[in-house]
Length: 237
Image (cartoon, rainbow, N blue to C red; front, side):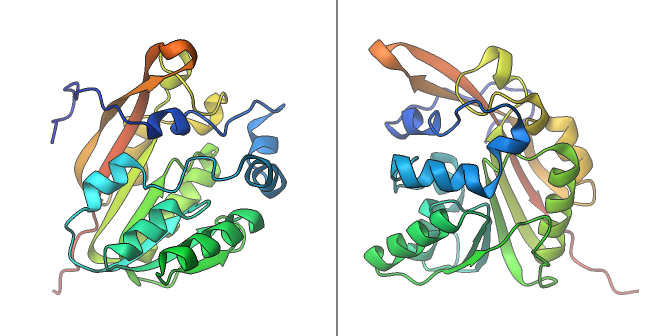
């Protein structure tokens, strides 16, 4: 694993082009992030990011011992279904009714069981305390107040010793990268995550780069942020 401040090698795969899809500018990040907006995307564009897991999620989770996994903002279910295929007990939550329906159908086609829940992570969802061993947040881009609320809920859902794995578009991506949402309000950096997960033992909090092939074969770098952190074990006096 690359240390903080080092530049990791470029990663390239066919899925990188799909990673750049799905974000069409509306008037504001609030309009873009509504259930109606996501329902429209999922209804009209098929499996927007494909059915294979995100490359960073897969690289992190491959070989993990089976555990209880929570996928927040699971979308159409590609990561949750893949994690279930690896033997994990998976719950996926998303605000899009269309996305949850597609996720359930994907799980059925793959022959795995995933508990997919339709809920607004900020307004509707209250986590069961310490009910999960791993929380995955894959490109869950939220405005600051909402992000802090959801990250606090993610922390509450983790058992002591549990891990959070986050991959998202870095704030630098807007000016220096490619793809991702065009709204600075929903982008964040290492300092934001250090504050959100200040009580955790942080193993990685750093930029990651993806080679994204666009039209005509032109390749540009997308700038992501990756966090791996462990919830400290409880200490008895």
